[in-house]
Image (tube, rainbow, N blue to C red; front, side):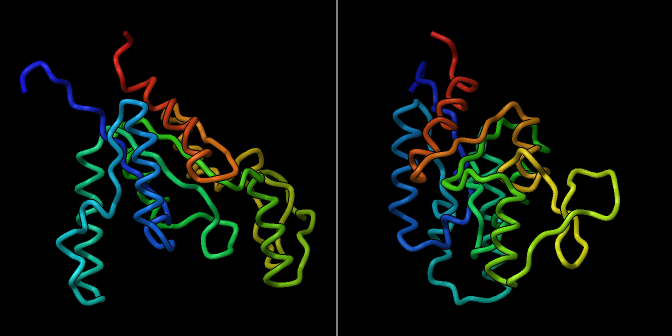
Length: 201
């Protein structure tokens, strides 16, 4: 219909697609987007025709292609930065999507229910998984003064995730929302995207 503006489309990225109740989680995020004047787009939206395929290489590539198409058609991205599979780091596929949409120059925001700084998450992971403590670095320079027992620097102080992932969000002008639930954490980030994408009244 002429004169009707389409709502800016927000790609809802994260490990949510792998979680139990994924459809309900996305429904909640889409509702928050709608209330802010945006249209939330979940990865599952592009996979309707792929649901009957057997797991395997071709199916995986089809899903990747569908997700890329959704990102290309969206105006901005919203990324869940929660730790993945009980580790300190986020879902690596979501990290790729951050880089992809950042390269397109689109506004990005993140959110998480785990607001601890990344080095704290690494410390906790090493204690639980390996029964080991972090130690002071023997060298100087870089972005951290701690290392694990393999000698790998523990970096990204002041950020909830690896600096490259959260950093690309920040460089796009975005923020990272923190809350007790996914929807609560996403709310402030969605409001930031709405302020950037919707015309001032």
